[in-house]
Length: 332
Image (cartoon, rainbow, N blue to C red):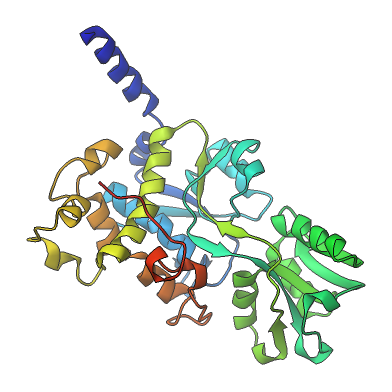
């Protein structure tokens, strides 16, 4: 029995060798992000990447290195993103990517928990007087190649017995420019993406996002198949920012809990041992995440919520106890 236990431990250790070791050896996390989507991942005027997706890269860095700044951002379009992950060009993909069955299986990747619940919609010029997506029979619609938007759009028009003309481009920038230059009647994408693009305009009031939500778009980071330890780390880093909000821990107050007797908080911030060892990280990994990046509410608010130009309502992205569907298993 003792020999079997030792063998099992050796096998367990071997299966855990991989991406974490590579990231530590390189001294940085290679994180795949978008080519520029305000609120999610885009460089600011100084070239510093910012956004909700970017903060999850920073959170993983904080969990591993104790600092959020050891990240190399790799800008990828929709067609490049999965190949870059599969080939090892990046360690994690955090790029407004929809979690679905085909991608989670055939493409050879594992999706971490959803970081933003979204849905696809349509944007129109207000002057066209369209108030519903069901008025788009015969419309030309701009969309991006290699995304779930293409199939969702086709399904929507077919289901509603309407005709349409798809106008497809490779990059998100090409899609948006085509719409704003009048090459198509409507633009379709995730509603958060439409809101993001509208904020860039000098005259955002001239465009309207139609009320219909035509799909489920759970956006989540992803890792390669075959490295369970790395999948666990990325998964629990995401859960940690959700759990932190539920526990009332934030980047501003977490230091005040260092003498707490609350067992859940003590386990979370590493005063009680076990979580770090289970993941192959330091015991204070979750403390480092929250201290350096914040809880989910902080991340949402500054990038896509009330403190951002997008000013999106949290909606489904509220905690489960506040009417949303964000829920983290116990971090213990």
